[in-house]
Image 1: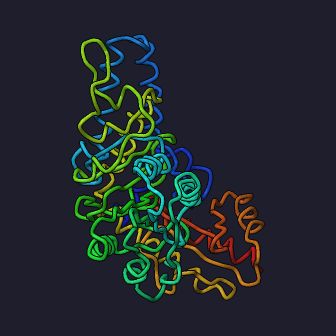
Image 2: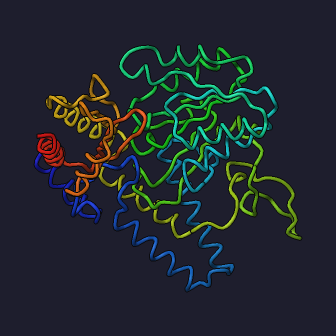
Image 3: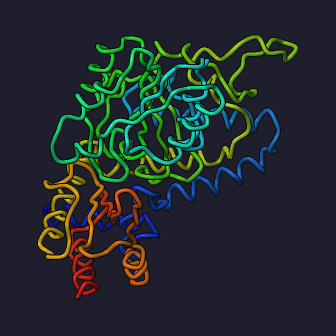
Length: 393
């Protein structure tokens, strides 16, 4: 990075107050909210009260802001806004997809062994309530060698109705060849639907989600977009819209006649939305996305993320007691590592946090996860590694 680019980044970082007093490596958990987003949220709450929070003027203003956020998200995913359902989180999006099927006893759900506990618990509840069969395939074993496509297809069944996988694995940082995986699954079981947990990919990878050929793609705004918590989304492929029945139902998802009676579902992704949300959050997320676009394109940001990940991976690999889970530099912003002789990494993570260096403990596999974003400085990586060396000494 040139000195001019370095200066530009440092100026850009000043719009993130949380970066001013700590070394932050937890973007995969929650990104720091930039000042323009915070200001947009405050202004929106003020505007709603000035208009009157339950008035025609407020409804029109709020609808405009909500649709602006839908368009901003769609532009980052390179999809039509009509395919986007606005939700509260990744988990909300996954629940819309998982509960939306008309499940029958004997239907099968296939998960990888790297999915988030929320996905696992939802699948278990579907099994309990509807007699759905649930099984996993060993994806974690393909982190450094092996064929993730082949192992997934191998575990499909003729009765597999839904297959669930993450685009970037939240615990190891592995980036999956999603397009090829989806194509192979459909060739093996043409009727299978594919749900993707995109918690760690949206805001990291340059995306053209339509070209991934998956049915459902659930994401959030509060991680790599650095937007407010409590706002996310679900992409529903147009051809898959009618595969799901809305589960939670409210005025935002239905069409009504002149008497206010329900006449049917909204014709697009809005049908899975429910009712009142914290609407001032929407301009906050829009502002966060716009701020990132001011610094660079999704490709620009991703290239910097990969560059920083390689630097951190190389620095960690020089420490004798450290073993990175990846044997090559990650292709995402998640760098996971283990410390020799540590059966529990929690005290180590807490020690770093006491020094204002924020990383995350991961339970399975037992490791520490450090996340880098385009916002991260090379000097911060050096400080983190120096602190790790001192802690181990």
